[in-house]
Length: 423
View 1 (cartoon, rainbow, N blue to C red):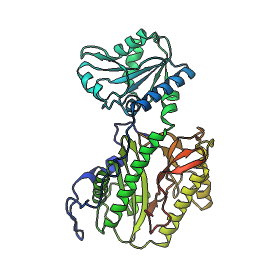
View 2 (cartoon, rainbow, N blue to C red):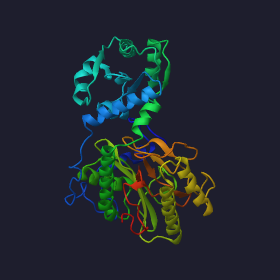
View 3 (spheres, rainbow, N blue to C red):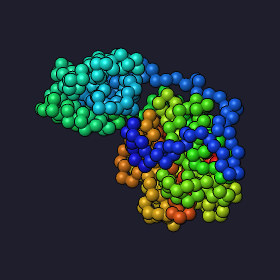
View 4 (cartoon, helix red, strand yellow):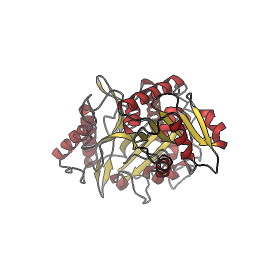
């Protein structure tokens, strides 16, 4: 459960990758390749994308943080941070496309010459565009912009997911430059969500919950994780979201947070753990539910209730000014008192209590032991303190919340019983 760069493939996606295949019949299961989605409609039509004024505010905030941290410019490669500040959507390749945000004045997009028309199509701010030819050094163009703005002798911040070749190339082009982390600037902006961002995250969560409610009664004995995931993805698309991931764990596989490659089918009396999310206008949801197909055993019910109490414990501990790590501490104290752990040992909670979320499914900072960042208005987190019993089953309930002046507020309301996982 670590933060992944925008274009990487995480374990959840690898394990669930086949879920987009057509839904085929299995013994005892009669399903058409295309499910009947006629009862669903797009619920995102009223959402508003991030506009020019919002992005201008982000640039202004970044420049204020640069001044406060004595950073002359920030280099950001293709990825979610490039979209965040400029609106430019671009995949990473060996050809550098990046933005340089100076401490004052207009940013500059650096991109290959033949890509300039495409870059301008999605550019959402006023910015210079400087191009480089195939036989030229892209980082030399970055260095030229910094020299022209008289910033070459100021510290240059590097966004944390920027690849080494770009950092090394900039150091070669400006051998006297001081290269520093851009975290105080980029994290300082992205960790605090605005009302517009929170509205999009709420829309994405609403889609995921609606898709869950449609999928849940259609799960049948004998289904595979891929078939359940295909139902969930089909519903998500019809509801207006773009599926981001769908991890379905059945029976013993649920005891391992990111699953198992062993064959799985829905069986009477066994746990079904679903961890799914989507994007709406680039902002993500992340919701997990655990239930039992058929009647739950006393042990399954007990563990489910303990996880629900653990989730409530985390929510109660998440208060303005509280160091993020103390939320995780509170959950572990509760679990230890109930015989789990201690610490990250199994049976118990082997991962952090939660992660930041926004344009990326996993963003800084995390609800994890030792994290000293104080919770502040606008921060958004998952709350997912699962319990895992190797060789048996696991339970994870995950809902996200955002911090308000009055404390945390749910994006989705947690369930109250194992029999009613979606309210």
